[in-house]
Image (cartoon, rainbow, N blue to C red; front, side, top):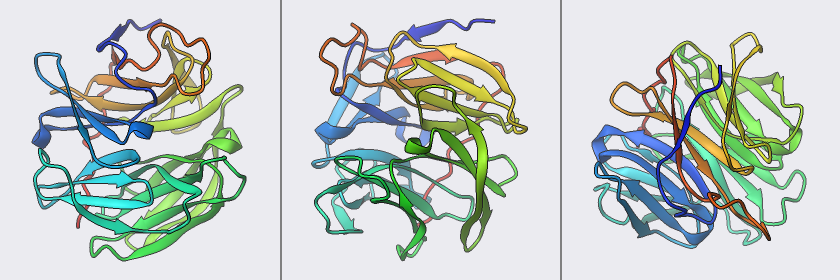
Length: 281
């Protein structure tokens, strides 16, 4: 079966990333990463944009009712998701490394991953930020830290270091993650952002291949959702029933990008996604 993929917006990003659906802020938000902007898809189909810094990598709701945005070298916290978050916590000082992607676990911790601007091997880190905003290293020596999402049991997380060409699985505990092991390797392209549905299937945007893969918990490829843009970057479930799969795309570094590169896409799926996990701090 080939799903129908709908183009939801015009080309609104240079490097779209980090989609996140949260009813508390009215639906879907995502980022134009290297512009430092957060975009909001409104109910009438219009797109609002707010500038938050040099980089806007990903965002999550806060359990307190506010929101947190990953900025170039740290996190920016806000009390009102309609206002620019201005309480900034720097995590590192190296100007050659920027934030890239992340997510939360069921215990309220935020996992924020980085990458070097030149994508130097081993220069990136996956950090764990607990609800008190204490920072520790979850994974060191990674290269392009990308998607992080927890399965329906809350005991396993899936994680992409794009340079490895595979998705890994991690054990999740109240104290952090561990037991990293391979889960699924893509035959071509790079695994980028990912999401997990309510059946435990892992949906991964494969950068460079114009496809989102759905992989079962046992590692079987169940479905390939084609997108008419090669540089798909991330996916997230949304809509009132969490059966809208939103896909972000990029035109970064393309001399002759496809006409729709940088637009937002959507496909209807059969199994609903999981509600996004908020940051506890």
